Length: 353
Ligand code: KG4
Ligand code: ZN
Image 1 (cartoon, rainbow, N blue to C red):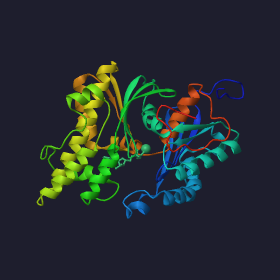
Image 2: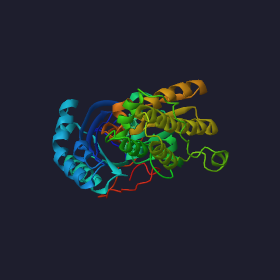
Image 3: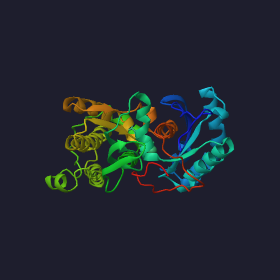
Image 4: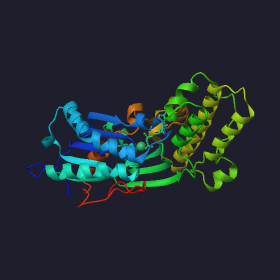
């Protein structure tokens, strides 16, 4: 059943409120069709910093505290009232189960109270869908490189509202996780991605030749679109041990280069073999300045149309959830029926519940 107005005409520019609580951001986004009206993010990252990683219990409690003020702030920014909202979307998974549950319960209450449909959507698909806010035309089919703190995968997106195929994924650490771990051993703090990005600016990307995981000819033949970062992590640790006079900026830049190189080698190979000349890069690591620059260079050379959301829309946010919700409404996809649970290990192929 599609979302219709009082005259039974399908709403093509729905106002959708999206709620994201899969990790440490309590994020509310509001869109009208593909236009972003509000994007409010309350992060509990400072409360986790001294533990060197996100503590689930702390994140869940912070979501509870931030939820209502964040919704109010978003409505104010969008200059609308609650009754203007046509549909509610929420991240149903994957993520930290306790954190997800706060979002799902809040969204269910809101949708029920307003008498509006509720869409439980996939966090990973939402990361990719935020790019669609910046284009008037549908951008599928496309290859998507999804690189975040919890996931790294290569996807073929034939329809962002319902047809996503996983071509490959990481066999060990996610790309963002590798950034976070290397930043920790370099004493650069948490979260590590932005810290390495900044440190690398003063270093040489070619100072140290770190390994590119899963790029032997056998790997290209058997698992061309999978990633592995554990060998790289070990190589960096060994290098630091055996080189007491190491230059931190050089290590950061060379490590970053190895990650960027292998991500793009595989993403461009996927474009080539699928014949799809469009690439979306999404997720927190897509905010990385070196990844953005090298991707632009290589895609231009290969004749591939590249799309990367603005850095603020790459890391977790509510606009991406609202965006996917809006695309679901416009595509006439059914809303999630009845009460549902968060699914901490929701597969990327399952765009919505
Ligand atoms: O998508 P995201 O906000 O959360 C998850 O869904 O995981 O991604 C967070 C990850 C963290 O590992 C963080 O270190 C990484 O994205 N990240 C970056 C940058 N900004 C965030 N990695 C490299 N360079 C950056 N500029
Ligand atoms: Zn994310």
